[in-house]
Amino acid sequence: MPRVNLYATLRDLTGERQVTASGKTVREVLKHLAERWPALEKELLEGDRVKDGYSIFVNGRDIRYLEGLDTPLSEDDELDLFPPVAGGARFEGVFGGVSPEQFEGYLKKWGGRRLAEGHWALEGAEVRFWNEDPVPVGAWQVARLGVRAEGEEAERWWRRIRIACLRGGA
Image (cartoon, rainbow, N blue to C red):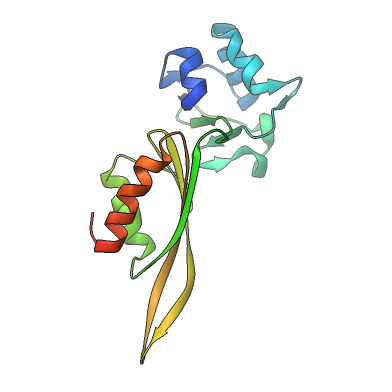
């Protein structure tokens, strides 16, 4: 059965971090979850669509870019259900000399989970990062990385991100 990871308020509604649910499409999995936790359906769905601000990923890919609620699933698939990040803090900055690969290493070390290219989940926060234009320093070009952290625990993670990126090490 597909595994479903629940975050923030959705986790609070179920009391679970990860559950399994039967279904051959995202819609069927959500229906199965709604049978177990009716409050989850009211929180996540509006009629026959996902409420604005909520995100559903299948194996790290947003269903909005797949087949929506009709995205087919296999037994090995993993879904991530995210509520809107509003209500939490948002922190953003640019760091020099940190590569995307190095930054991903920090996120892995901290227990993060890759959702998509440049998009990771940490406990209580989501982190996105992207390449910024490099800065010329003499004959050299210094790479720069843009980073944004959002969510209830964003401030805590932002402190850790800043220290790691400014030191060049986690």
